[in-house]
Length: 301
Image (cartoon, rainbow, N blue to C red):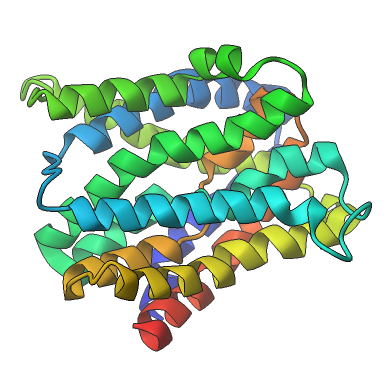
């Protein structure tokens, strides 16, 4: 019930965006511009601030970082392999898969930060910040690569132009150099970044077309099964393989069971893919979030 309460605000904003787009003068052209604002300015600022908020102690969190990267690589590999699995060859459209594969391994960092602090206090929040710092670049590259490759736009060019990857790389470098956002600037940066959460989720709702999910049912089941079932099980194995302590284990299991990132919709739309379909996946993933969190924290832990 606690997980559902924490996830409800995100889902409510998605529904609100859907209602506003369809039943008020705030129609689709307006939300297209909102998407551009979130993608190019607001969300990069949020990522930059989240990574800089807590110092990254590489030595202390080394095993957790290794486990997190292994988990991330596992999720990306499973997502990429879906069209090649026995029984699925020819049943998954290549272009739809390129835009939707990211849903299988990316995560909602807003929900993760809230839950980690509630369940493990300041130490849990710091450990999750470490995972965000080392995994976000990997996940963003994993998300962009199939879309760039399928669209024949070139991976390097797509990565260099991706504001989320630019913001993450700059924040990691700044954090490791021991630099911080000046105190007098923090409130302004926090307000800019914080606004991306509500606007990004509402933009996702505005582009929502649940009917599009029926066109790619096999892909839908595949990416959501990886996100909400396979990854928590992989995390359970990694906890033992890397001999993580209790708090690190809690954070890794929490990290593995998150609903997918709401920005997946924005990224797919801005790169010319089926944003409506990805928005539907984000919505279903948000609904499934409490179930995978219960599996990871209630059963596996």
